[in-house]
Structure formats: structure tokens, C-alpha cells
Image (cartoon, rainbow, N blue to C red):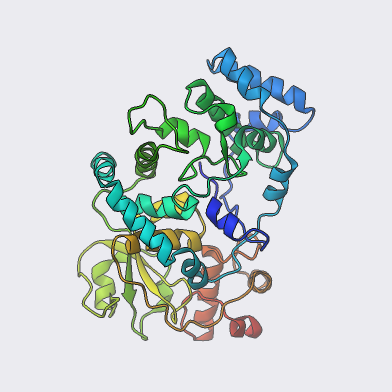
Length: 410
């Protein structure tokens, strides 16, 4: 299971700004494995490592690999500081996408499509995942391998598994990291990446590395830090595992009429494309929308005054990669641009709210009886749904975009 996160490149670009990932996972019943991980967190670190060594050997990993990996494990306070300092986006989608999808990154992406065309064709034949989809993640996560991170993976994962905040998430990845050493994919000293344990050009977590790792170039090892073919095949197989539907779209920029029933613009509301066409939605260039049964949600990241997209069921895969709508929509839009789509019209949206203003909005909505989930400053689907309901109650277009005027009225 992937935690919601920002890419390593995003964290690097926004270092010192207080921007980081939103850890917004739904509560789940604790499994026996999760309970065991929680029971073994905290306390003396040497005793914790003894438990890690014992579990790894019980899993059948070799003594030599376990000894080498455990010898590399130590506590890293910088990792804990990163984990505790996580915040939320303080930028609109227009600001974020505008910064991340620049001309240089687009040019490099298109050049990589041509350079690795044969490999991409094989990957798509096997997995159904288009080249531009993989390329967009490759570009956003590490700028095509230029920003791989400088945190030692084994110490980072040991620190997070020992810490009692989320050991059930990180202990399995710690075991998988030892398995990577055991399989000879990477030596402990080669395992360097993001602070939360992601490794390689598309920043996969160790369990994903082990489960989907593919030797794309046939050299006998799987190296997601240096071997592009390994990266492309492995990433394609991982995306396929999330439920990617071969031959189906993921995102389409559209134009929405002023009289559209905006309360129907929500990720949870999927309707046939023919229904949107009947309501006056057109392609971004004003040409008619296909009137077919392909289901999609209408997404207005900055309300009715900003850009508009139809998000098809393959878009759900982006939200599994990263639960942040701002990141996921950026990645999906980037893939369309790498594939040749024209830039979307950013429109003239009303100003949004800051993180603190969003918290104040959530508090007031909760007082009015709406379920906004945690008051955290994250403009998630619960908060957008509550905003839509309050907009409907007040007789204003219910596009789910909170504005300073709405906050002041509340």
C-alpha cells in the first residue's frame, strides 16, 4: 500500500517552504501483521534490530544478506524530522502544475519517448500502460533520474519502522529492502533515495521493487536507480497492478457552460460522457464531445472559473499513486501534454484559501454539521463535498471551490 506523498522532486523543489505530502489514509482494521509491527516498535534500538534480524531469517533470507543489511541500519533523526514536518499544498493546481510542467521537462519527456520507443512499445504490449503515462511519473518523481535523493534507505526505513507512529507501514518495506540486498539487486551502500524509503527513477517503495521488479535489459539484476529499461518495465507492471485499463483514456480537458449543474462536478460522481455532452460540455477547443458511454467525473480543481477536466476510470490509478488531487491531476495532465495535447486554458478562477483559512473553513463547516473529516487544511473530497452542500444551500453555483467570500459568509 502506497502512502499519499509528494514526489522526491517536489520535496526538493519546495524544500524549506513547509510543503510536503498529505498522509490521508482511510482508517483500516489492524491486521495481525500490523499488530506485530506495532508491538515491536520503540524501545531499545539494538533489541529492535535483533527482532528485524530474526524475522528476516524466518522469511528465508540469507544470513549474509541479513547481516550486511542490518549492519547498515541506524537511527536517523533527519528522517523523523521530515516525517513530523509534513504539511499540505499551499498552492493552487494552476501554480503547482505551472511550475512542474515546464518547457524543459516536456522537451526531455518527449525526447525520452523517442529514445526509448522500442522499450516503451514492449512495456505497453505487456501491461497496457502507455509510454506517456510512465514518462510523466518519471519526470515528476525524479526529473528523469536527475534527482534520486540522498537518504540511505536502510537507516531511513529502520528509523520509521522503529518509530511507533506508523510501523505497520514501514516494517514490511524494511523487510523488502533486505530482500533487495539478498537478491543482489542493490548493495546496502547503493540503496539511496527519498527519506521515506522510495528508491529509483520513479520512486517505488521496496515492496513494490521486489514484487514488480523486472530485468528489462537482461543483465541479470534489477537496478531501478540506473537501468532505464528496468525502470520502465517495473513501473509499467506496478501501474498495471493498480488496475490500469488497456486502451482507455485517463484525462481530457473540456469546456463547461455557465449553466452547468456544478454540484455534479465531483470525483465521486461518474457519469457517461454522453450525459456531459447533453449538458453542453465540449472539448477544450469547443468541438463536440464524444457522445458515448465512457464514464468520467468532471473535475474543477479551482472551481467553475478555472480549468475543467473529465477524469476517466484510469485517473483513479493516479490517486492510488498519490492521494493528493493536485499532484495526481498534474501527473495525469502532464502525461497528456507529453503525448501532444495542447495546454489547457487556465481560465480566471476566484482566489482560493490558504492552509490556515481552509482549517477555519473546515472548523466552521464541522460546527454546521458537515463531515469534513480531520480539520487539517487539506482541501480533500469531504471538504469539497461540504462546500458544495453549503453553496447549494446559499443558492450559489456549487462547484466545491471555497473562496474568501464563502469563508467570510460562514
